[in-house]
Length: 306
Ligand SMILES: CCCCCCCC/C=C\C/C=C/C(=O)SCCNC(=O)CCNC(=O)[C@H](O)C(C)(C)COP(=O)(O)OP(=O)(O)OC[C@H]1O[C@@H](n2cnc3c(N)ncnc32)[C@H](O)[C@@H]1OP(=O)(O)O
Image (tube, rainbow, N blue to C red; front, side, top):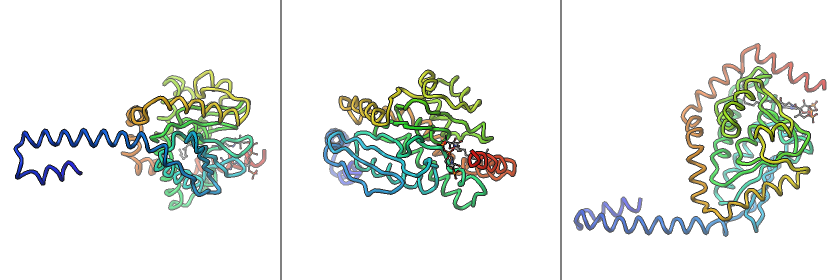
């Protein structure tokens, strides 16, 4: 904008050549200052987020790394309210230029049980629209974040739980749990943004197998196919390993890192950004099919009986 203003005001007084030289000088100065400013900002803008009971954000003043803890007992079912809290937390982290974020859970044996089935069963269209739109927002913000992200998976992570983990850049999981995208086993089709995250994590062939079979992997098998990066015995250790991963970026220009990440993920992000309404319509029309509703209802009953 400054450059446009400068150009319009000097139009009558300067020759084309003079204008080109001055424009170049201002542009170089601005971009240099912007770079220096952005490189310096992380040291001064860490914050203490007002605590939301569903998502706790704890920023370490020294490292600038935020631990984001989902806290919706008993299993971190992803409801509209939990997505709203996550979306807000991600905005706060983005605006305050933290150094990195680690996603984890306060539930002792569950990272997240995925979408709250109560949101999918006998849904009200208005609420489901808000739910789905916020789900999309969370993915766009997490997958496209300018800061590096890691997941400390301290429990089971089926379906939407796995989706949150694979939207991060690094995953450390505790032993003896299950992780995977089991949507097809529930008769539901994984949305495009979930497929994108999976393809970005494991090979195309593994993604196809995992998604079509709806496999839930043990921690050890997840490591073998690259769905997770490391195993850590306890949650505290998992967080520590995530911190080590994020600390590696201390020696990398934050601008170069975030632009590179963004450019690698841009196509996936645009794919959803360009068809958000269509994505909702497809899911809504499938969701209200009586056969799909029956399947979801039966599945909820089977979980309760257990
Ligand atoms: C073509 C149609 C398109 C329709 C649109 C669909 C959208 C698809 C797009 C997105 C992808 C994401 C989809 C999903 O995430 S669907 C959710 C899938 N989740 C699961 O399959 C996991 C189900 N849960 C479990 O397997 C287990 O609960 C566990 C392994 C996570 C934990 O086991 P455990 O510790 O033994 O706990 P319990 O099983 O006893 O559960 C405690 C309590 O919580 C309830 N519960 C569990 N999971 C959910 C859930 N996802 N939503 C709501 N409630 C859940 C469970 O019923 C128990 O309740 P209680 O008996 O009343 O205490």
